[in-house]
Length: 81
Image (cartoon, rainbow, N blue to C red; front, side, top):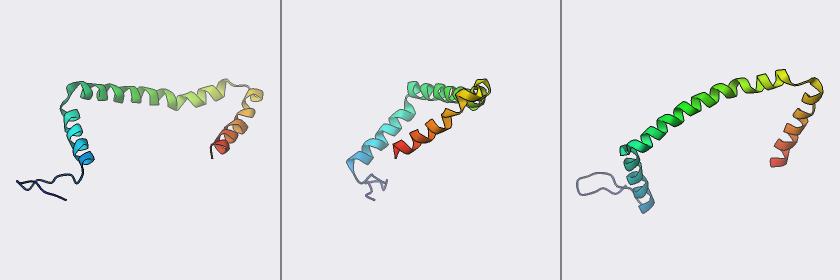
């Protein structure tokens, strides 16, 4: 890896240099850091609801309405490939 006049490491290409510069700017920007904290809280809240969502939905469904769902899910998985 190339080194600068003071011996610091430098990226090999322009894109790596841009990425390093952008990362340092993001770390110093308080607006971006505040948004990251809000996102973590939203993720925690969404995960909390997501963990109990499927079980609650299954408990509410009647047997006749629940039977076609596994076939539909399997078909969707196989159609993707």
